[in-house]
Length: 208
Image 1: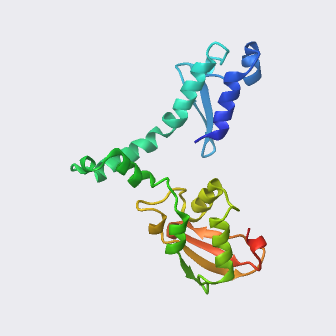
Image 2: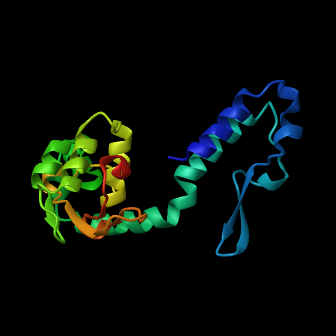
Image 3: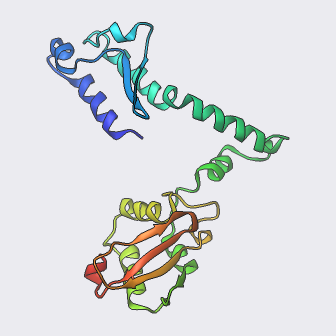
């Protein structure tokens, strides 16, 4: 979720010689951040701004910092989400769902069937399924040119999520729309409507 912070904590936890940690990292049990131009600081323990991170307490710092990132820093937002979620799911609706079904409704499905996405796609702006640029696009997506991680990133670029809705990618109704003739423009997307705006590039290599 926070890859940069994870790497930093890993470096802190594995740093040797341990005696140099305080001078090398210069950390305290507090988190500084910018809030709309205003500098703010949250303490991980009482008086944390005055407590240096050392070899003896670095594991505790890593634990508290990770907990802060995942919980404390978004407490207000999560409380609002929890309140709204409880309102929508009141009246015993939760009892009708298994944990797996609830996860699917909230997070989407992790299994990605791009063939189903292709079958359900629509084309606008002059594109058809047989248009060369459309055929090249699906060859790239369905072939070995893209890894699964790259396909997930493409899906997130077009839809705002790297997961499928309940029922799979066939329910997504992707739209591929012509965005002008071949030029130097990059593709763009309207994530709210699952629309990929794709210029009509002159070659498969340029599309890739």
